[in-house]
Image 1 (cartoon, rainbow, N blue to C red):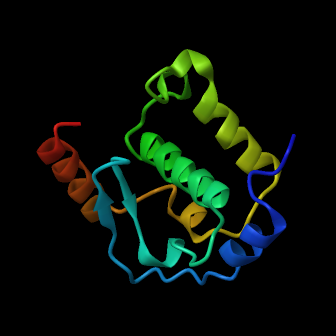
Image 2: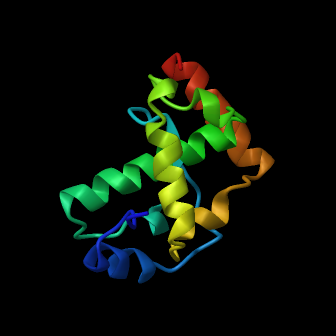
Image 3: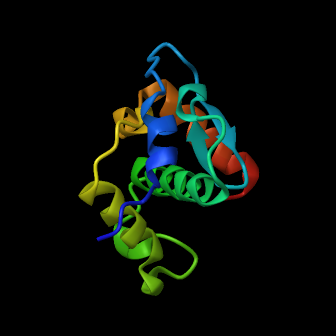
Length: 118
């Protein structure tokens, strides 16, 4: 299975430092929480797209959505493939340290989703 990120993008991602004190921001387009320490500067367009996919998948996980229901067309298996590729080639991305979120962050996510109509 091909890695999700190029070596160059992987170096940028793994250079990020996890900062547990940070507060998340809500990305309305992707309907997910993103913390500032998860955003590397200088990713290739393909690398940024893959990172966006990870944020989206993580949001499904945060919301308890079964993988069979991930995406607009779950039957395509696209987001499941993204997740499988990320798991097959583990990376040191701070976002993986936030697979479980605090009650405060969960309440923020739910409020934002409600406000955005998602």
